[in-house]
Image (tube, rainbow, N blue to C red):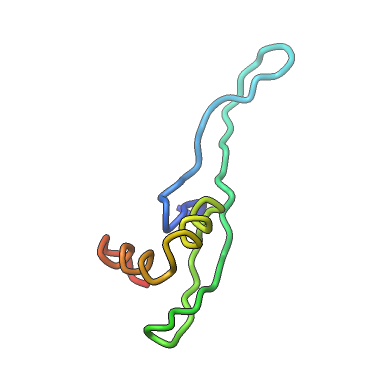
Length: 78
């Protein structure tokens, strides 16, 4: 799944586009996914994550060390 946040797990939402004449066609709302590189001081290396803007705020709030520890505990390979 390409539009998937590693931190929050946000993925696309699906629904209908409704035209002026009320014809409905399927569409999707992608989350705002960014590729961000963070430095892990404990390991002395950089990690690249695919995170949404909400995920970036969570990393700023909690710190990259605790977020990476949570991802590893959940079974993601970082």
